[in-house]
Every structure is written in C-alpha cells, then in structure tokens.
Image 1 (cartoon, rainbow over the protein chains, first blue to last red):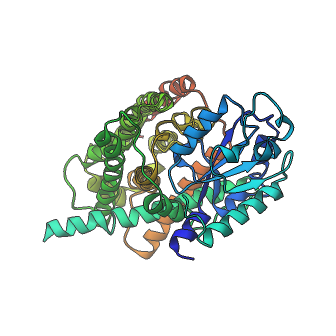
Image 2 (image 1 turned 135 degrees about the vertical axis):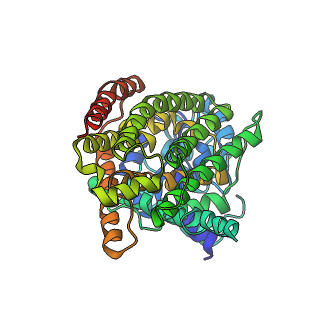
Amino acid sequence: MGLREFVLTRSINIFHVSSGSCNNCDIEILDALTPRFDLERFGLVLVGSIKHADIMLCTGSCNRLAVPIIKKLYETMPKPGFVVVYGACGCSRGLFKDSYNTLAPLDEIIPVDAYIPGCPPKPEATIAALVKLVGKVRAGKDIRS
Amino acid sequence: MTALLYIFAFLIFPGLLFSGSMGLLVGWIDRKVTARLQWRVGPPWYQNFLDLIKLALYKETLIPSGVSGAMFLGMPVLALTSATLVSTILFLINGSPRTGFIGDVIVVVYLLLIPAVALILGGFASANSLASLGSSREMKLMLSYELPFILALIVVIMKCGCAIRLGDIIMYQRSHGDIFMNPSGGISFFVMLICIQAKLGFVPFDMPEAETEIMAGAYIEYSGKALAIFKLARAVLLFVIPVFLITLYFGGIKLSLDGLVKAMIEYLLILILMIVVKNTNPRVRIDQAMKFFWGVVTVLALLSLALAYLGR
C-alpha cells in the first residue's frame, strides 16, 4: 500500500445523490455519522458539492428524470472517484422493478463500485460496504477510475 | 542576502511551511474539540494533512466551461499569498519588535481582508448561481464586520499613543502592561473576538458557505489543487488571526520560555473559546448578522473608543 492508496482511503468525502428515493435511505446515511458510529474517525465527511467528493453515494430508484442528472454528476466528479449504491431501490430498482418510470438499475447507467442492499440498510451495513471498498482500493483494484 | 533571508522567511519558517502546517494542526484541534463536544471520538491529528495531500496530489482539478481560468485559479493563490504574508510579517516583528515599518498594522489589516476578497472574486468567477449567492453573502458579511473590527483596532492604536507600527504596539505593552487589562482594551478585545468569528467563517456567521442551504457557497466549483490551496489559506488564517489578537492585546510573543508558554496558553484560550461559540450557536441570517454588527457590536466598539479617548 503506497501513499496514494493510504491517502485515498483515509480521507473520504461523500456526496449524497438522491434519485427519487423515499427519504428513508437518506436519513439512514446521516445516522452513520452520528456519535454512535462516528465515521469522521476514519476521515469520512459528507460534502455539499460533487466537485469536492470522492464517493458518490446514490439512493433511490433512478427514475427517468434522474438519469441525465446522474450521468452528468458522475462526469463532473473529479477522478479518482467511486460510486456506491445505497438501498434496495438503487441496487435493483426494488419495488419499482416493473414501473414505467424506472428504465434501468443504476449499475447499467454508470459504473458502480460497491452495493449496499437493504430497505433501508443499517449503518453497520454502510460501514461494512465502505470497508470493502477501502480494501478494494488498497489492493489497487481501482484502475477504471 | 537579506532578499534570500526574506524568501526563506516567506517560504519556510514563519511563512508558508510553518504557518501552513500549524494551521492544519489547529484545524485538527477545531475538529477534535467539535467532536468531543458532540460526544464523538473525532479524527486523528494528521487528518487535515491527508485531506490536503489527497486534494493536491491525487485529485483532478476541474475548471467549469465558459470560465476565465486565470481568474478562477488565480484567486486561491492570491488568498494563500496574502495569508502567508500576514504570518511572515507578524512573526518577524514579534521576534524583533524594533524592525518593521511605519503603518504595518494597516498593511496587516488589508492583507487580512484579501482572502475574503479573493473568495468573493473566485465565487463570482466560477459561473455558478450558488457560488455567486455565497459570494454576495460574503461581501455583505465583510462590509458588516470590518467597521467594528477597525474601530476596535483604533482603540489599540490610541492606547499605544497613536502608534501604527506593530513593533511600537508590542514595545508599549512590554513597558506599560497589556492593553487587554484596561477597560477599553477589554471591551475592544471582546468586539475583535466577535469580528474574527465572522472573518474565519465560524458558525454563527458561516452563511457565505452554509453547507446545508447553498452547498459550500463560493467553494462549490473548486476541486483538486485549487480547493487545496483555498483550504490551506483558510488554515493559515485560522492560525494567524489569533496570533494577531495576541500581538494587539497581550503584548505579543516574547522569545523566552515563559513568554512562549504564556502566548501558547492565550492562543489556546482564544481558539477554544471560538470553537465553543461555534458549536453552541445556530447560524444567523445575513440581515441578522448585519444588524448585529452594525448595531450592538459597533456600539460596543464606540464605547471602548470613548473610554480610550478618556484615557481609561
């Protein structure tokens, strides 16, 4: 593990995108930052602008209106950047699988690095997924970005 | 030879390297105390260094399309340069109070203003509606806090027998006692403390970069190296402004063991007071801030000015 991998995995800024979620996942993301779990210990903070972000955390079923916005946000993110899908809707469209309004799951629109299933996922699941992503980056498997 | 010494002073010792790394450490104190106040553990001491290294070395620097690149990328450099210059001037004069030039207090005040101006111009240059909103708020905030800030500074200058050299202010306090101990000095220190809270963009007055409403304000389009330089400039300012206050009100930093310890304790007290105020207050609106600064705070500053005029 070189300096690059260490720095990239110890200083993580998360930008949170909601593509038509029911707000349950969004609140659960904030729970992971509360004193009980305190993700800032590991250098993980939520940021307000995609230009400051390292991880794009996507919630929601990714409906037709959100697709161009999500593509644009992914292109705007400074590389190296990673995409994490949060919640059942984002991973597989969940309840909205047969809806006229959701055409494809998120990983068919932009490349996805980690999945966090659940409706909503627990903060422990969030932390587990981030640990897996950190392991992936430290092993040097982030060639794409 | 002196030119080389000054370049060394600007780049290494009291300048960029020293004040930058001290600023990042002080930024960690800010994050750690905030975390403890919220009953969390908080990040390790090197967290801010990692953030900066990541932005500076490993992230892309994006320039929005249709934006003047020189303006957009030049402003962070301007902010960092002037903040570093303040630190260089302050520490050199604290080291040997007989040096300096007439009017260097005024130069320091203007140099402390430049990072805010650079942020305003950078925000307007980035062609983003939220950034220009942040810039306009920053401009209004600057207009409101500069008036009491300069009035409080005039109190110090008056108490020191109209000295506009930092060296004279320090020498006066070494022979006559700290200005903070006078009634007028105490009130003007309090005014100054409120003003630097706004100058540093700390919470009751952080509407220029309100994360929850305008998404980091003027910083919104900055990424990679440009953002890193802006963050470094903020860190240097966070380190340097309390030192400026110590110079004005507590007789500067004496180069002896007990002098350094005294300066350190004063520094930490000012810093922790600012952090506690930051963590126990909600954000005010921009009109409330203007009313506050031009009302209560200016009246307090005028009161201390009157007391200073009466020789108190």
